[in-house]
Length: 576
Image 1 (cartoon, helix red, strand yellow):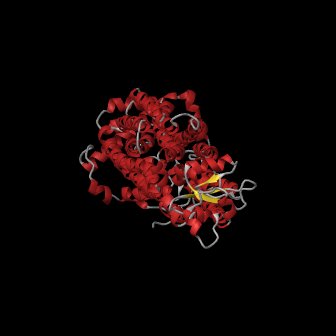
Image 2 (cartoon, rainbow, N blue to C red; image 1 turned 45 degrees about the vertical axis):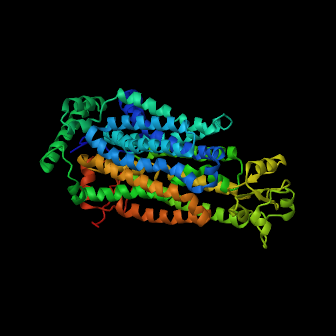
Image 3 (cartoon, rainbow, N blue to C red; image 1 turned 90 degrees about the vertical axis):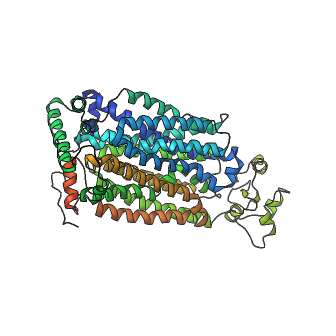
């Protein structure tokens, strides 16, 4: 049995996790050094949302083509799909540490290419390199932390990876704000991303390989030395013996500790059921819409009626800060209340929040200010051509949907909700509008409901981050047998990035085709499906050694009464 020495996780797990600072700083150093991979993941997610606002200003082709904007965002995700798939194989073949070193190198190269890109094509090439690195790091970091953590605080330590993801997103928004007035705005935003990659590359050279991977490769002495540093002396021998028995059992079963039988991967009941739970969580994590919020947060703020780029970035900083705080909440509760309970609370809140967002954007779009012929004529020679030949009255939303050429809305100078002007969208007209102390809109329309949209976004992040934000990665780091953990983790991470790509590539197109309100409603319906999936298919792995997780999947027990009082033993339902 791997992880045989087990002390039940309870309310003390959080305190014990932080007591490692002085009792065993070596474990924390392993966790935070590997967790920089999560930081890279988070920084890339956050920085592109703000950089995109200024990339549109520098490259007119990007500003005019929604598909090009989506490509700049989603090509990193496409690279991450390949990176996660390669990372799964690389983790099993060359080790967790080597996979992280390669990920850092790719990320650093991508950051340099993006910062120096003279055109959108090379910018997209840099995004692909960054994506390859992020994809590898996204599945390797939690796996490395999980295998180098004592079982009773494993959830809390793996949650530090989630905290660094959200911390990276928050720092990205801060950096976006810091460089809004600097020459080469977006180049600084994207180029600075190479610094944490270089830092992790240096740190990982000074750290060991995963002890469990070493043991499977026959390097028992190295593995035992590391385990004695991780565990207290009275637990280390038990862990070493348990790991030895686990590997020997696998060798007897498979015939070789080096061979991974891919056919048996699908035929093995515990692995198959683990993949259903792990892959399902990763897919639903994306399909409930999180990266529409993180990649396009400033754009969503503008759709809610805030015209300024700086204002959009500043307000987006609030959502990323709440995301980071939610990860801290996860660290506290993950080993106290358990994975499944956090998922259910999280999804219930996400469903509520998406309902609020859908209602707010419905009101925003159905009550936009009217277009005034007199206000438009005030800007002689710049009237939107489609409006000039229109036989019916227009409002702001109809003005923004004009496409021959693109048009913008210049709000009334006395009150932004009064009728305004529908004009051709270009930098000259934008300056004329601002010159009369008016607000210029090209993404969303003036509205009194914008603050309600911010509240909806804040609620979404508050509920998503502690549960659906971190738990899928934790479950996937502990639900698979050791011999399949690298490849299964790679499959799950790849499915996450494929889902991420679908959402990132389609969000702006969906908002144009269906409207923002219906898009968020669609995410709400998917969140309801995710809730039922968690109730039926996801086991509770809190504080369990891997062998116990395998036994649970073998029986496929569903704990219908998963919400238990302290001291009460969970009741098991029948097999399904």
